[in-house]
Structures are given as C-alpha cells and as structure tokens.
Length: 471
Image (cartoon, rainbow, N blue to C red):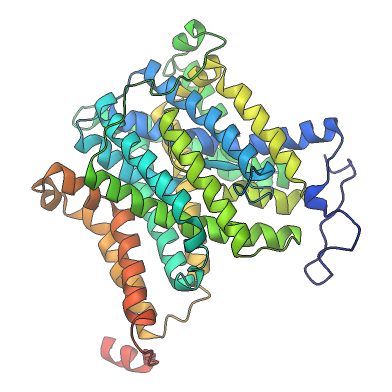
C-alpha cells in the first residue's frame, strides 16, 4: 500500500497551510485509492468495533439472533457516524479523518444498567433510554464543554483512561474463563477455555512481534480469526446460525421495543458521556497535530456534536454511545494518509457490512474464550495509554498523587466489595456499581476540589522521608 502516492501532511514545524492551496485533509483522492485506504481503516477498526456489542450481549444473556442484530446495528451506525464526523453536516462533524466507534467507557456501566433492569432485552430498553438522553445532552452541551478543556488536565484524562482499562480487564478475563453466563457451572474456568484465551493472546503477541507495521495493526482481527478457526476444528465453534442467516437485512428503529427512561441509569450514562467528551477532545487535538490541521474550540464543539448525534442515532437503531477510535488515529499517523474522504469511504463500507446479517452471524460465532484473549490485550492497552499520560504528570505533587490514588480505589470498589452494592436499590446500583463511573467521577471531582476551586499551594512528596518510613 505504501507504493501508492499520497500527499503527506505538513510537518508541525512547517506552515500548516499555504494560501491558495487545499489542505491535504480536504483533498479528494482517486476512487481506487479511497476504496483501498478506506478498507484498510475497516481492517484496523473491525475487531474493536464489534467487541462491545458482543461483550454486552453475552453479559445480558441475549440469544444468538439478538446478538447478531446488535452487531449489525453497531456497524451500520458506526458507518453513518463516521461519515457525519469526517464529511461534516452543518455545525456537526469535525471534518477530520476520525473513525467513530462504540466507546469502551460505556461497557461496564451499560452491563450494570442492563443487569439492574433484569437483563435480556428488558435491560437493553433501559440502556437505550439512557443512551438517547445522554446523546441529546452531549449535543446540546458541546459548545460549552469545548471551552472547559482546561479543567481536564492530564492527571484527570490519564486517571480515567487507566481506570477504564483496569475495570474492563476483569470483563475480558470472565470471557477467557468461558463467559459470564457460565459462572457457577463446571464449564466456567475449564482449562480448555483458558487454553483458547491464552492461545489467542499468544498469537496476537506473536503477530505484533514479527509482523510488519500494517500486519501488526491487524493482530487482534487475525487472532480472532485464527482462534475461532482452531475452536471450529475442535468442535467448539458453531457456524450454524451464520448459514441460516439472511444475506440482507435492515436494522429497524427500536427493534427491541420502545426505550425506557429511568433517572439513575440516565445519570450513569451522562457520566459516561462526560468522560467520553474528554476522550474525544484529546482525539481531536491528536489528529490535528498528526495532520497539521488547525484545531480550535469550534472544531472540538463540532466533533462533540457529532458524538452526541451518533449516540442518539445509536439508541434509536439499537446501538450504543460513540467516540473517535484511537486505533484509527494511529493508522492515520502510520500511513500518513490524511484525507478525510478516506474515512467517508470507510463509513460507506461499514454501512454495507451493517446491512449483511451473515457477517454479524459470523462474528457472533466467536467463542467467548477467544474473545476474552483478544479483549485482554485491547483493554490492557487502554490502561497503558492512561499510564503513558500519567507519566507526564508530576506525581510527587501530593494533590495529583491523591487524585490518582483515591480514584483507583473508588474504581476497584464495585469488583472487590460486591455485597455492598448488592444491598442497594437497583436504580442506585445502576449508577454506582461501575468502576468506570465511580473512578471517573472521583477524578473529576477531586481535580475541581484541589486544582480549580481552591488556591493551589504546591505540596510535594518527600520521597526520602517515605523511604526512611518504609525502612
């Protein structure tokens, strides 16, 4: 693919645009190149795109047919959302090469909301009510939030991303053991399940280790394919549903019924979208730096409006909250293909895939242990990005250290003291029984308390005294 000529983005040290010359981000490439580079985005995006509906569907106990519908709805909405974000409609869309996908931030809260409402499709209806409301709020608050970026410094963003990764890793490990639906049965934690998960993970690591950059970007997708293939050969993967599925199908609005709007689940999803807005803001500035395209508060506001509109659309079309995918931002940086119309082409591919139930059936056939092995690497990388950001923070300063320490403690509370949350009303549990929600809220609140609403006095940890005390 490197042999195809492509205008390179201007270096950050050079002028970002020249008078009378179109910026590379806005250049329309020949159709063959658009198709080729757009499909490359699909390959980098696909595994992460479908993992959220699969994890949620398995946790809520959906049938294979219902899970297939979730996957197709997700791909369809991803395509529409990516086209809106890259192409731009009115004041919606950043007009940058940003691929949209379901945010990992929402996984744990949505599982908690769905299970609190009884699981199955009944739980989905409460999730969709919260998703639609939070999407509307995001759209309306976009211009105001874009001016509040200064209140979300690296200590907050790094802590939130670390919390997201650490609290999602147990979800991946549950799948590695056989899936949450097997808890309490002899099959849960069966060595065979762990072998599938470990084999998938080792394969992914091997591809990253020996593969070229492009092949490495496909490591997760290849791991899912190979792991599922091995499981099929050993009789542990069933593609019967794929054979019976229709070739063409449209995700109809409110397929599972009319959404239910309940206060506390809505509050939980509003917190998710607050964290997602912080994530989107960072993504927009990152892609601006990579492409050499000027980014200001208006660009951020348009990107956030696109997130909000896509999230509302997701709730209507049986999907979930949306955010720019970091994997594809990395692909833009690696390939130096910065035209936003490439993402538009990728969006068209996603829409087509979302209209093919057979494709969704194939994804739904991926065994839970194989999915768990792949998810472990992906969720671990999310935590790693957070740690990388925290590496730029002065953690010798007591206030920063406390923000991180207390937020991590709050995030671990739901998974370490489960009986405490079991005794809460279901509505309250839907808000609090999520490490991402608790950890994110704690980081934001403590930053406001320590660094915004009070006068800042530098307090550094004396590590010599700590060492003496420890000895």
